[in-house]
Length: 74
Image (cartoon, rainbow, N blue to C red; front, side, top):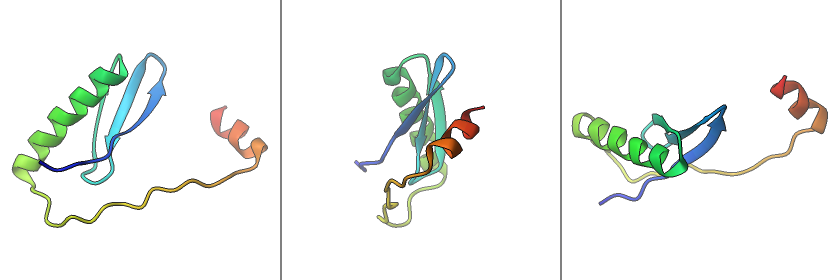
């Protein structure tokens, strides 16, 4: 077993889930469904393209000015 990361965000009425270690993306109507679909997509991907190392991405946060964030949503 390998522990991977799922990053989720909502787009309209769907949740989008991404695995940054592998690059797989999936979606679902619920968070649970999106993660289950991501797991299935990732397992299928790894059957064809196995992980070669245990490197993990660095995930951090950063700040932007409120005006920039508002323009990005428009």
